[in-house]
Image (cartoon, rainbow, N blue to C red):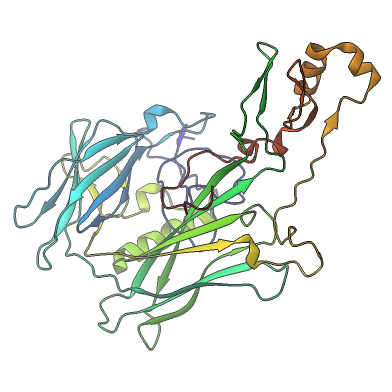
Length: 414
């Protein structure tokens, strides 16, 4: 078996993903969260180039370029991100855009101006001495998202997110929806006390609450089509469903959905990718050489590239915030306890004679070794923590959150 395998990640952070084997395409699509697809590369060990992105008029269009790597790697190797390519947008009328700006980690941005309806555009990539190019095509028009909403059928049940759209011109029949979830979490104990086991010292930063709250993110995609419908309308399309467990509605939740019109060729390509992910590892699973995207290596046809890049006149975007207060729990009288992720936190004070006898240094090292952290109380005058709690109760990073606050987050909410 060829030692180099490729992995398609259909969502950037699948809710039930068991492990990250490789990062090759940052956003494809599926109607559910499918984490890995493991086809064998061509027998000559040629690296496969993966391209993801769309040419969108009047935007700074983003493209991600990566290449295959061995599944023997435990983490994503830096060399899998293609950071030395040159990208431009070209047109069949001789148009050439300014070169893309390299943003690092295989990410590039190209300033795209107005796209003429009668001109065919494509992406040109120069990499490792070769030139790759997407098929030239005319820009596609995307209708507006008519409605975007959530439904909870009964208290304590899960939540479903739906949208509807239509196109009276019949120009748009195939759709790709990308949705991004951002949500804020807050731990049980805000603390301004921090213990460093290396120096065996406690730092007290009044009113800091450095890791009391943070943000998490998930991204995924869904396909849709009106091709078999009597009218060019999509009504109540289910985007995704959230089970009534988890931390998404702990404080504030936001979902941003973008709608793109895609061609029938792109739709069929992504359907094939989805099918192969569902059948990954099967005896008759098609190999990458059988996938037919619209990107070719024009200087060396034997080299393989995967992806589907198309020009768009526009996209449609909707954003929705959902606050925890909208999910009251009728079984609990307290207004402060709602349908949300439950934290089981109990602090531990220095009430053990044996631990007290050990002194501050040994007690602190002992609690820290048990993955406990100070909860904020201070014993004066020694700046010794008065109580400890599990780290997950004092540090949002233990939930997988970061301090990367989304730039659109409400100012009145942290």
